[in-house]
Image (cartoon, rainbow, N blue to C red; front, side, top):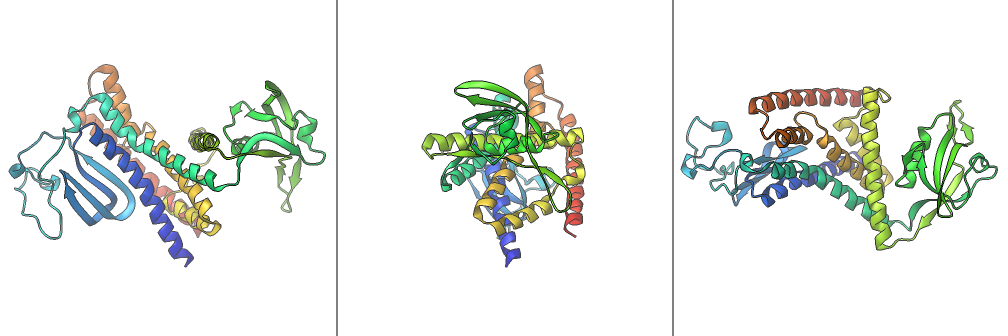
Length: 370
């Protein structure tokens, strides 16, 4: 039963995240008058497909991706149209019951005829929609809570070392070790990265910013001999109002985004090993664990996944939306597009590297599981 719930939850999470991402590209293209030849969710053989207003809509077997096939050729008379796989080979065959015909009416202009600004909007819209989805999930989670956790200190444990070395009740934490804290989880994140159980704080005290260098925290030792920091204070809760909910959801979205970006930076600097990366199998395993804890944990993980997908797609790497945006930035700055053959070669190389990364992370996932 647990395996079935994990499978269903994984399909739903991946499906919704991918659908929202591709819907962003689709809506942006339609808004700019760019032709969309196909809108597909999933990869591989089509389970269902139909055609409407010059666009083929499809749901495919493997829920591991999706795509928009944006028109990038001049309009051609319907009787001369052929499917991409048959282009330049044979005239189109009559539609069969097994497969929908390639759209005979092509509505909109080719992508190549759109301005640089419009193309930037189209390629960035998928990631933007992922951020919107993450925000909406986090907003709903905050609505389900009794209150919103603040960053203002309520009280301390007995003999708290941090109270003896600078912090006071009523302090609102602004920064820890120079990093701005959007939410209470930011404070925990920064303290986990602190050295020698000591951190520099910036707080609001009586309306004034106060710098508190070298705030120390107590420690505890586990049975296995490992030592960890003890969080020696509690914080206030914030009453739920429309404004506090909007502000809270925004801050949590920023917290998730910055944590993901820092993970990429830590990976580039060698602070995090590539062996710690997870692929699709690892994500499914994490979804299975979240399902056991309840709907709230599953939704938090879904928010993390969708925000992560948005940020990852904006990285200036070949074969990603960010790589396309980089080419468009060069075109906007120089007034000349990057040669098509260069783009194709770079994107092909990027796709190979991404496939290699997926294989590597999947092997790592199986190693951890078994």
